[in-house]
Image 1: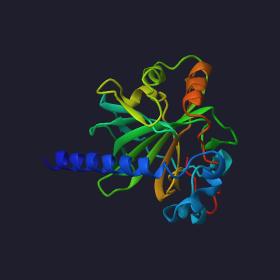
Image 2 (image 1 turned 180 degrees about the vertical axis):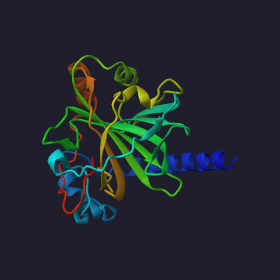
Image 3 (image 1 turned 30 degrees about the vertical axis):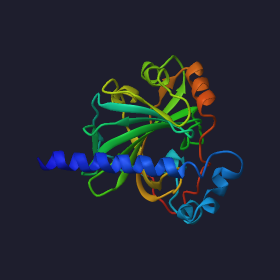
Length: 247
């Protein structure tokens, strides 16, 4: 009973976050006067985009990462997709409560997965043509992002499901119980771990990042389709500063 109540609360929080994000997205973007270098000046709520010291994305250098023998993330994703949104700044799949990850002794519910072209985080200086950010939240409001990279290759069947349903800008379509986040993940789930931020306004810090080392594939046609629908939507690299990256 308690678990069901928590899941309902998280779902309500997810809806509120989606509404807040939609409102914020009217004030920022990736081009011109609304581009990333101007975010902090567009709204007082976005100040952290300039003043933060643990901002994302970053270039993950394997040689500088500390070998910490990280415990595997327990991923329990189910076929509980809810809707697909074209937010103008990304394509986002929303999920009903029920899918989750457990990492570092904490359980985080999956809220949504959205995409960036090209990737925001780099690995050893390499930028990927597409990345997916699985956004999770626990009962204390803490956020965790599982980041999967896409390299060019054969068509990705999971992406094909999503891309087929991309609505027009600022619209949402039904995607009920036909998709599981697992479909987008590689078999090998070794990862890098660091503390960072949201990569979009308000650039809030305290976000746990788990960047999967093994990429999956997307075809050139799929990458081009996303670019046609959304355009280039990545924030430039941020300084690592004093952060520790674990591997």
